[in-house]
Image (tube, rainbow, N blue to C red; front, side, top):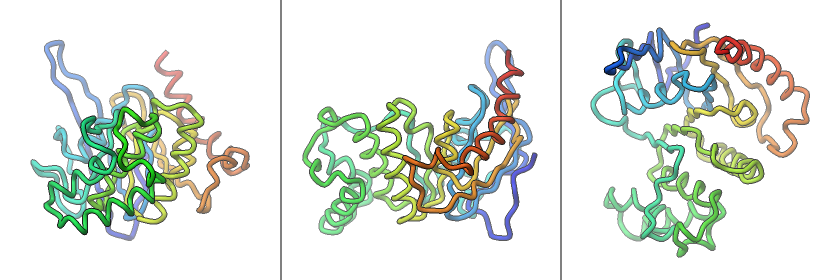
Length: 266
């Protein structure tokens, strides 16, 4: 099934994307003839079986790896040899520098951008408040919990005011309690700043909770088998959302597609 189209100009446009990896053992077709558009302000989650190419698609959007075939346009510009402008990427593991304080980690990108000191301090202060970390600016990464480290990593990406935010299973290593609290904070930040977000996750609950659309990939070679809008009003109460019938309805529908792919692997 092709991704849904829109009358607006997409922020991300992927057309007929294929990716083949070469190794000594031969070639592996990871993604095949995949098309996807993401409009400004959307929060799109990509879900699928393990090894189905979810992160590959994210890496191609960020231009970490080139496609074998197809076209990729990000922010109105064709993919080139550089990471697209106004884009930030959050990896599965945080990339905090252990010798810097939280405040200096958050402001690291602004330092590289040679932002004036007063403006940098103002922006970092606002970000720490946004991430509920105002009291931890002088702490070091080893003094933080896993959830707090993930918040700092998110704020580092937000500091440079990206228009596009790519998240690669950012909460997978966290316990349910911490993950749910971070879902709440991420939704609050997204509603305030309105970035375009594409997230890869293996957690269907997480995808439905956070997203305006959930895209399901097949087993390799991957293609889109479902592009499902999530029409649940904002703001969302992440602690009670799973009790709602509309959440259960989306879960049942999407799981029907996912379970078929999982069973096909056996």
